[in-house]
Image (cartoon, rainbow, N blue to C red; front, side, top):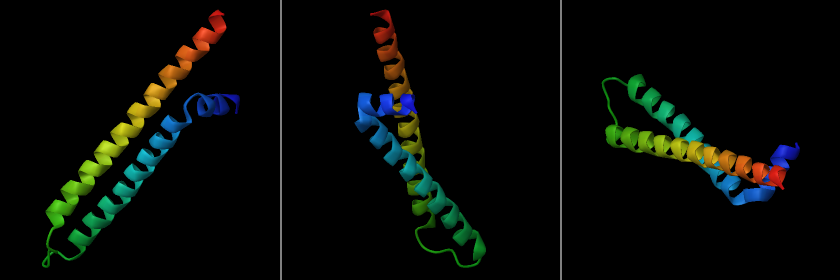
Amino acid sequence: MRLITFLLRSSWITVAIASLAGALSGAGSVLLIASINAAISTPGQQPSGVLARFIGLALITLLAGSGSQILLARLAQQAIYKMRLQLSH
């Protein structure tokens, strides 16, 4: 619990942005699966814009997920750096 409060105190903005990016990635994944399911449930009648919707959702999911992971890795590295500075003094 102390680690979570330390991370939130050190850079709560990064935690908030990473959480939002993770939520966006999760929502994109759900919409992507729903889009695929809608496309395969009616094989003879392909709705217009299926390919564009698929590519858009795939890009959003990829970028949001990658951004979230990069921000969380950066946050962890900053936390380790700050802890090392505190221990060295």
